[in-house]
Amino acid sequence: MLSIFFKRILIAIPVLLAVASITFFLIKLAPGGPFDADRAVSPQVLKNLNEAYNLDASNWEQYVDYMSGLFRGDLGPSFRFPGRSVTEMISTGLPVTFELAFYAILIALLLGVFSGVLAALKRNTFLDFIPMAVAMIGICVPTFLMGPLLVLIFGINLEILPVSGWGQLPGDKILPSLTLGFAYAAYIARLSRGGMLEVLNQDFIRTARAKGLTEKMVVIKHAMQGGLIPVVSFLGPAIAGLLAGSFVVETIFQIPGLGRFYVEAAFNRDYTMILGTTIFFSAMIVFFNLLSDLAALWLNPRSRDA
Amino acid sequence: MKNNSLWSDALYRLTRNKAAMFGGFILVLLILAAVFAPWLAPYSYSYQDLNLGASPPSAEHLLGTDILGRDLLSRILYGARISLLVGFVATGVALVIGVSWGIIAGYAGGRVDSIMMRIVDILYGLPFIIFIILLMVIFGRNLWLLFGAIGAVEWLTMARIVRGQVIGLKNQEFVLAAKAMGVSNMSMFRKHLLPNILGPIAVYATLTIPQVMLLEGFLSFLGLGIQPPMSSWGTLIKDGVESMEEYSWLLIYPGITFTITLFALNFFGDGLRDALDPKTSDN
Image (tube, rainbow over the protein chains, first blue to last red):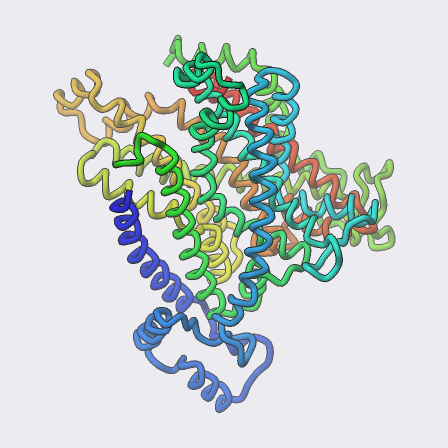
């Protein structure tokens, strides 16, 4: 268990370094400098700007400089917002995105596991068909359509929930969290139904029933532990998806989180911001993948002492 | 390959699956609509009637017009061309990379296999959506780049599936016999391995198309995908969202079209999977 953990971390470090390096040089390939976009500046100003941002050094020097900054947690200055560092911008946006992702995953787990387990237990009844049909809708209606539709219904027509913002009006966190959570609830419902169906046919479940355990005990103590392993392994990759979802949701609902900063940086060609967030996102995703793999290993008794 | 019992069995099972047949029927309609869009569309996608502005569905404009007075039905029909094209071409790219990677890794085995699959594992763990955005930002929002970038992301699962299949095949007698007869690697892949793994490939390809279309919609929605005056369903939904408060039909009709297409593709893909490989179906 512990050795797997260390092995995985040992692989993750060079991978992240490679991601950082590749991203760095990719951005150097981008046509045009960061300061020649909207208004013409005099050559002297441009020279001073390049000097201030260390852009007159050779690519190699800049790279070494950037990478050593990376180890100190310094991602350089933002090209578009003078006086603000990328690290500072990430740390303002991160708590917001984290909160949103947390609510979304909570909704997804509660809704998904409950309806998935129920569907598996009541297989081929309408308690199976209806949640699974709803799940199919959740998978086929993309976030960028679901969000606006929820706004249209609850915000504009019924006027019961705010249509944008985060933490300014009561209830303005409901629609974004639902939008982001619903798609994952659908996947989790399908995964937990499949996992539960597989486990429910196994001998140890029959044994548990034969021992005279109540159905509730059989399901909660015995079946769910094994049946939900696919859900746990899905959570790591889901974080990557949540991140992409947060780009859309934060744009729709005008939430000042990391996702919206990233999309804005992509539009503004704020190269240092793009570079910094890309590295940061990759590190986060690698970390969560590691975490969910370990949790899945730990839940599976056969691999626990390996 | 006539009288191939696997394929005729599969066809029989597929035709009995109502959801899959319905999905397939819708797909054929959509593809026909996309191909014949210039003849079917009542107006050109860029024809503007500025006096009309945004008008609700009427006899002249069945699905209404957008704020520039462009016929929505025509724009959806032309958008189908781009959206379906992205779906099929990017899936094709993913297919070529994934199948070659998987066949080589599975057939070579040993160290080559473990290095190639380790690379796939590592790539799996990276936020590829961000790299697509990065590429679009750096190299400009070009349609062909979009195909390539999406395809380059979606091949990973295909490589895993194909590798697994090839490993199962490579020690079977007909492969060993072919090898003993000195068949070259290339014709081994083409004549002996590929035909035997077409089933899983077809299934996974069908299920990749909706994912690719979602990705294109996502990028276009953020304004990083298809650029005007071209339009895909993603950009139509984006435009619809901007004016949904007054003109909700501009969001609803493109949204319904997109959702129905994804439904059809998923139902057809699931049906194909059940038909070709009854063991893996979940019922």
